[in-house]
Length: 287
Ligand code: C5P
Image (cartoon, rainbow, N blue to C red; front, side, top):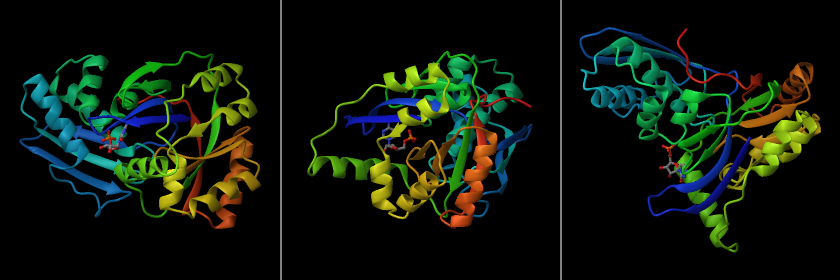
């Protein structure tokens, strides 16, 4: 919903003030007992995504096993719907699901906070994906506090793109854009967005949404401007790049409006596919 990016830190991360919001797009991870650690997958990115020790799911299982001092033995299967390198934190969602599933399978009995600590070593967004809902993220995104607001469902359209964008490249592009001719930017707060969330009016929320990474994502993928413009023309209350892109998200007034905007985006032929979603949704959970 909001991604304010501060200066680059000495550890290679940027200081963030971000408002995370979990929507109804999800992957499914199955964990079964096994003699070794093995991962298979189907769906989005199958055949492209490496399933070896570099995979975030394998790294999550190994990190949990090391912390709990148990053997990392499991047969894991991923049914993937969230596209790869899309700016939707799909990899982080899979890592969060792995921590939860392996914790249950191995009976390690860790609290959500302990799992979040392990998650933070895997990726900035993993602790949020264990929480879900709508939450403020600070630090490099790993420090998460839930935002308490009266329950409201927000309706979104998600324009999926062909091909991904590399998160480090998008952050790097932002640094380059800021250095010339702009000076490094101070970190802005999320106060306007927090107050908009409390008002429960989609038009008010739409005006408060923002993403500092958007100009960098557009600089690397200029066609994203057309996707955002098509959403504005279709009457979306807000059009913005999601995370580091290239997925674009649009706020709709209600579920019917979301269907209409998705159909308009599909008809404009500016994205691979436009799907509707709602939020907030829970984070990783056992089904
Ligand atoms: O934490 P995560 O693995 O998602 O980060 C991927 C990369 O994105 C980092 O290595 C860094 O280059 C960039 N990043 C950043 N500042 C953040 C989060 C990520 O520069 N707050």
